[in-house]
Amino acid sequence: MGTDQEERGGWMRIVWLLLVVILASSIFGCTRTIESKHQETTPGENGQSTVQTTGPAYSPKIESHGDYELMLPKDYSSEKTYPLLFCLHPDAKGKQYVEALKPLAKDSGWIIAASNEYRNNYGGSIKALADPVEEIKKNHQVSEVYLCGFSGGCAVSYIVAYMNPSSFEGIVCNDGAFQMNFRPGSGHDIKVARLKKVVIMSGNRDTVVTPDYLKADGQLLKQAGVETHFISFSGGHQLAPVEKYREALEWLEND
Image: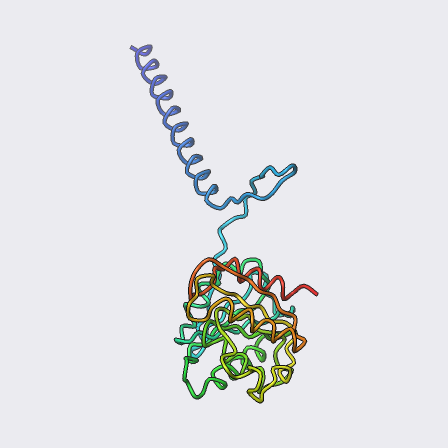
């Protein structure tokens, strides 16, 4: 009788041991699955890729300040200085603009903001830009300010720079033009703005502000002594892909 009980007890211990092993394997497998979601490949030697575990995926936070949206870089520190890119959308879509540029927060090293107030034909457009920029500069260490705009947001960026000489290092212009403001014979010279660099991004199928028109703007900028970089992307009158914005920021940072 005791032998039967001992045998049953032995079998029960074996069953429990198997259950523990199965449970442990299941938990380990789930952990590996979760970790794999936070792995990314990086170039290794001879062009091969290596896998690195980076912890939880970085998700940049966009701060809403009412009249503008603000996104800080991943490495943000109050002890460091950063260039500021302030964007204008012709339909006051500041949040959508910053959302489109979210991937840049991870590795660009820029503070990126966009107006929720500016829109085409808005009489207070300069105030919609100036007040947020001053507030950002007050709360963060900003090394220099670059304007950025899509369509009419680009056009007004040129005007604001012209009216505030030496206040801005340059402009990132996405499918926007001088219009007639700085054309020969207009009586206005873009040299007054004292811009150092301008990036022109042009959709190769844009029929609103054509690539040829923007290339002519680029020539006028070069004649005014402004370094100019032309970026073409596949598309029409629209925001350029974020990779093109990354290219623009990298070019602006190069001497």
